Structures are given as structure tokens and as C-alpha cells.
Image (tube, rainbow, N blue to C red; front, top):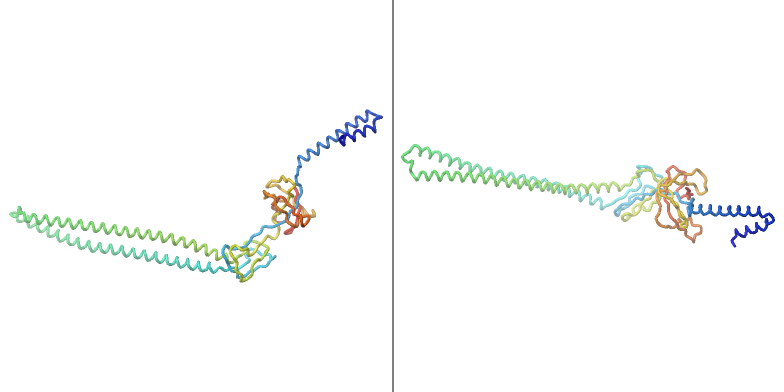
Length: 354
């Protein structure tokens, strides 16, 4: 017999002297009991495992100063906990290899530009030599052609006056030979001019190719030099905005390897909250959802935050949130962004609610 039936029977035995009243109250009690069970079931389905409140820790965005190559610490200008503003010098570094490479690239660039200028001058000189040779050869051939043409003209005049010698085979043969010689010299002059023009064309084409190649090499060297100079400027680290120095991990004169954290910086007030939901509780929380954040004691005005991250795995809670030191707690991590103008302290534990 169930508990409800036992209660109803006791009620019936107590009021059996008045069966009508007992019967009515019995069914009313049964109806109320069933209704309460139904309400509990519905609420359980609606709020099944839903965590309406959980805890978190107020944190701030951090940035770490490091360089991609081994470096030497010249001087650290800040100490942990110091507030700095935009334009303040944080640390001064030194990279001897960077200075050496800048000097090498500068020398290579100067030498390349010098070779380019020299090659251009050499090509111009060769073109001038070809033109001078052509001019000399042209003058010689043209002089021979003029002399032969003059002699050929005189012979024709003599031949026209001496009509009696008009049919003389010897003179005719001589004039024909002279005409062929003139034609041959003119052909030689045309070939010399064509050869000279081809040589000049090849020389100028070679000059343009050398200029293009040298220009590309110079451009690559200039790009590398600009990158090196940019890295050299970054050897003096300057704050771009207001920060609070979190930690200083080096000392003056120390040599550190590449990507070693030198200084960590954080904002003055918390900008996010990392909340932790117990792994036994199912949290139906979505990205972009708004939540209320209060101090752990519940005092002060609540700050509205926005869920910006939901971990896809179970992670251990921070040690300070454990109930017992020897019993770790695990759950899901929720990242919530909050306005910078808030009253929370860095590292303060807070309460998060929907």
C-alpha cells in the first residue's frame, strides 16, 4: 500500500461515522496530491538541471611583451603594479645580429646600385663604339662609291663622244664591271648598317634586362631593410594605451631567448569574468546571452555582462573555488565580457545569475 493510500484510509477510518463528508474529502485530498505531483514533474522538465546561479572570477585582458629572436635586456623601465600611460617606455632591448644584418643589407644595396650604374655605362660605351665603327666604315664605302660613280660617269661621257668606239667590246666590258663594283659597295654599306643596328638593339635589350633584374633585387633588399628597421624601432617598447604592469620576468643586462615573456601588462579594471558551472549541472546558456554579475556577498549594484565564450570540455575549477583543498571540482567554463567601468577588483570572486 502506498503512502497516499495509507493516509486516505486513516482519514476514512476517522470520519467513517459521516461517510458522505469523508468520501468528498478523500477525493479532494487525492486530487490535490496528484496536482502537486504534476506541478513538480512539469517544473522538473522545464528547469531540468538548469543552473540559475554560479560563481566566477573577475579578470582583465593581458598582453605579453616578447620578441621573435634572442635579445639582450638593456633596461627595464617599469616595476610590477605600476600604472603606465600611452607613450611611456616599458623596456629597452638590444639585438646585435639585427644591427649587423642592417649594415650588410645596406652595403649590398649600395653595391647593387653601383653595379647597375656601371653596367649601364659599359653598354652605352659599347653602343657608341658600334656607332663609331659604322660611321668610319660608312665614310670609307661612300667615298669609294662616289669615286667609282664619278669615274663611271666620265667614261660614259667619253664613250658618247667617241661614237666610233661605241661598239668597242673592251670599253663596254669595263663600264659594266665598274657598275657591278658600285652595286657591290652599296650592298656592303647596307649590310654594315644592318649589322650595326642589330648589335645596338641587342646591347640596349641586354641593358634593359640588367636594369630590370637589378631593380627587382634592389626592391627586395629595400623591403628587407624596411622590415629590419621596423624591428629595430620595436627594440624600444612603448605603451600604446593605459596598462598596469602585471609582472617583470627579466633583469637589466640579461640575455633571453626568442619569444620569452619579458613583461606582462593588464588593464586597470576587470574586463571579463570567467564563470564555472559544476559538471553535474546542465546549463542551457547561449552565446550572446545577458547575465547579471554581483559581488560574492551580493552587495552593490549588479553589472550586466554578455556571454562571449562557452567551453566545449570539462575543466578544473580554480583552486580557490574548491570546497576542500584535497577535492578538486570540475565543470564548464563560461567567459563573460563586462563594461570596463565597473566596481570589481582584479581577481575578485563574483556571483553570476540569469
